[in-house]
Image 1 (tube, rainbow, N blue to C red):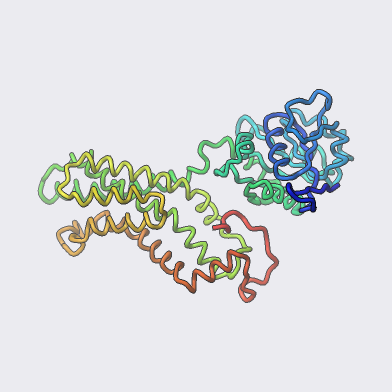
Image 2: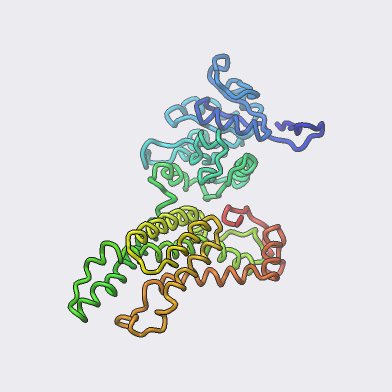
Length: 415
């Protein structure tokens, strides 16, 4: 059954919204119902005792489970697995309905099968979809556009998944299709992982930190000892870390913008935005914010260590002030940081004595990826290329490159 939604200030019907049914009147159910109502959806709650349901959002109706199912084709099940026992009696009413399981567990792999798979066995006539379990009630209430706005969806029926993803988009969230219902257990484990979006940034940061520590130790500590029998181990406390922080920060900052450039070139090659990026690029793009935050943290550490070390180069401090002031300017920040590194070593580049054991200095290695990103960005902002990528992102397609039917756009397509 469909309902008309009339826009405020006008008498014409803007579009029709399906009535959404919610089973469960807890924090999530109430917050989700409020978000749906604000987006123009008619909302009904299914309750065991409709007369005693309180604290529900204004504008929502409350019915018994059976009556609510009669007027809805999409049902969000916001109850714990232990309370699924009322559903088998409603199996006939759930025939061909879309049943969205939003539940989570209290520990990883708590049951042999996922809650969604168990639900599909319990009510085989329904089209079970797993989704919204990574979105908190607080995010729904506050309208947060943080990483919590990503909605992971999986299910065996593509049409049902598409309906759920349409609901997510219409309330301002970003749906991500994770495939069949077999992925449900992974989605249910996801909220129980510690800082899941930080894992890749931490691994990259740790790897770069260890590499530059060993590299700088070889150049600044081991080399003087081998060649001159000079003990420079005191450098490990201040000088070596102060070489690590700026190089790692610069590389992380460039890695924040590199996937966007790669995605742009992929779209230019394909001639369309209606095609998925590779999984590795999707994962990379989803953690860009975390990479940028770690880069900023390392930059601040570099500033602190620079203030500790007595320096004969006041210009170095002035450059760092400029970089900090420009920290919100994206590629401008990357350009300034790279220029800072280049100016720092402009007089050392051609001095053979600086290449200890033939190894380039650490700042040279730290400039490789940033320079690549800046060159790619320079290509992308040229007028002819910029016009083409803008047309593609506005929906234009190159028929010679892409002739298949359009598929769902994932969040990585929206650069």
